[in-house]
Image 1: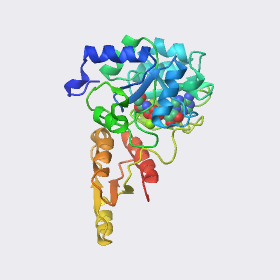
Image 2: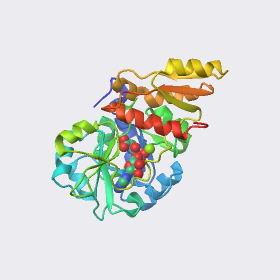
Image 3: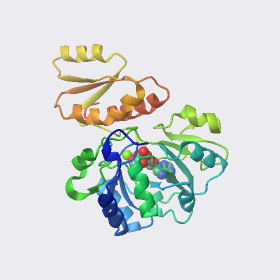
Length: 308
Ligand code: TXA
Ligand code: MG
């Protein structure tokens, strides 16, 4: 899905450069509808290792392989009927499927697991890149390990400076990461991470989704964290007033309509983090649909922030 921003349309020269860099084993940051990814050729073990080095990410945290369509996904993973149904309904889109891997899914990408995460992103620039490149692009979110995910090209530059070439596709339309569903076992559907596709919509197609599944080592309790202490509250103005009475400088992040809230969540966390206040107070979202993903990220951010 395109955003209104004209950077979501294509810059041919930038695209050609990105493809050339991927072919040369270099990293490319690229926009998706969820967050920006830090991509490497999924078939090049040295390039994939560079992703881990640039992020400061532990090598056993697997990467998602981004592909242009179901056919390309089948080169890396085995799709059963449930996977096909979910792919038909939600790809391109913010859904990652964890599936039995094929040999083309490298140990460097999967962390040595017998499963691989695959997804077809919906951003036109991401799709153009994947089609032009032809292969899979292994990519985590383009932030340093544990930090807030980037939803604009300038956020990626804040994280990596001139170190990484950034394909600018404007602001991300969804704003929180993909929903990750574990289909590696035939008898259960597991939720590894709530995200851009509501769990309710997945259950409507494949039946009950159970929390958890195979271990997803990147989904740590403390993650997505600003540097400023963060508190969650159902009544943020009252909480802020209490904290101000104790002499603390406070900034408040209000919830609001879930799609809009998700879209601006990470940019707001970055902006508020830069104010230099003592505490951020974030309003808890309604715990269904996209709100479940927003609250998941806020809770992890609250655990990861200094003092919170
Ligand atoms: O929206 C998204 O998913 C973004 C964009 C760039 O596509 N990507 C993203 O990647 O959020 P990352 O690496 O920040 O988070 C992916 C999560 C990690 O927690 C990782 O452990 C989990 O997916 N994961 C990937 N492959 C897996 C597998 N085979 N088994 C279990 N968990 C897996
Ligand atoms: Mg991430």
